[in-house]
Amino acid sequence: MTPDTQEPIHEDRVWSDERWTARVIKNEDDDGWAVAMFLDGQTEPALVGPWTMGRDKKNPKPLDANAFNTLVKTAHEFIRRSEQQRHAELNKNVKVTVGGRRIRVALAIVPDEEGATATLRATDEYDEELAMVSVPPTFKLNMTSAEAWVAAGFAKPRC
Image (cartoon, rainbow, N blue to C red; front, side, top):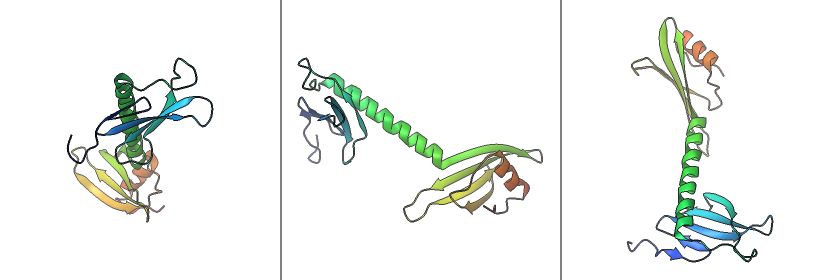
């Protein structure tokens, strides 16, 4: 541990290491319990899921090392899949053949609170850039729009 990190916590309802904290909480929707996984420095949980009742059927089962490690792995995978999904939403590409040339057309959207931007880019089969233009982030990239852009000589599309 460094001076900047907190000591690990190993309690029945709170368990933490250097990066993650698991908190067993009362489930607001019913009489059960839930566990919330927090990544260090985040105010919102990365993952919330049901938690097992203890033997008395009133209180939650205590956290332990095995449960914590499983929760960390699950939360990490959830974050990774969310990031992959977000990347896929913001970055799309299609391959088209126009005039006998195989061309990859990619749309990259950069989110911004003040206004997202987007770029349409064409590359050849050797990944050499053929064209790049700014487009509105609402531009719909599909085979038809990509073929039309290439056929129009990479002129800025009208949206």
